[in-house]
Amino acid sequence: MLVIAVVGALLVFGVRNTSSARLWKRQAALRELNETMRFLFHQAVADQTFYQIEFDLERSTYTVGALRPEPGADDRFREIAADAGNISLELNAFVNPSSGETYTVIPPPDFPSLGMPRPLPEGLTLEAIYTPQGWVRRGEEQRVRMRFSPRGFAEFIVLHLQLGGVQEMTLVNNPFTGLTSTYPEWRDYEWTFGNREDGAR
Image (cartoon, rainbow, N blue to C red):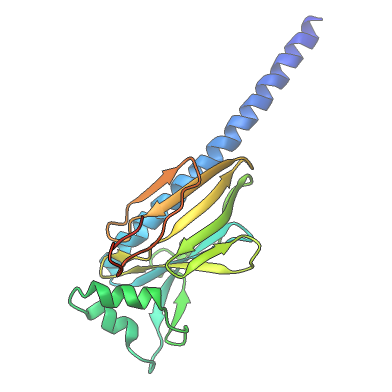
C-alpha cells in the first residue's frame, strides 16, 4: 500500500510539473517575441537597415529578415531612410508598401540565426493579426509582415494569441518607441494616424 501511495504521489507531482513546464515554455516564448520586436526596433537604427518580421499564422511561426534594396531599382527605401524626419512620408510607405520588386529579404547579416523560422511552442498559437492594412486571421492562409525603419519607427501591429487553447492574449507595439505590451485578454485596436484623432486606440 505504501509503494502504491508513493507511486501515485510521484505521478501527481509529475503531471503538475509537466503542466507547469509547458506554461513556463509558452510564457518564455511570448517574452522572446516581445524582446525580438524591441531588439529589431533599436537594431534598425543602429545598423541603418530595414528589418522585418514575417508571421505565419497557419504554422504559428515568425521569421526575421533584413531588407536589401535591389541594384537598379527605385530608391524608395533609401529615400525614406535619408529623409530628414518626415514621419508622414515614412508612415505612408509602410501603410502602402511597394510590390516587393525593389528589395529582397535576406537573413540578418549580423544575426543569421534569427533568419530561421521560430515556431511558437505547442499550446501557443497566432489567431489573428491587425496592421494598418486591416485584419488577417488564422485560416486565411496569409502571412503578415511587420517592418522596422532605420529612422526609428516600426509598423503598428496587434497580435492576438491563444494560450493553452483557452487563455486569450494580446500583444501590441508602440511604433514610435519600440515598446511592446502584453495583456491577458482579447483587446481591439484601430490605427488612426492621419485622422482627426491621430494614433492607435
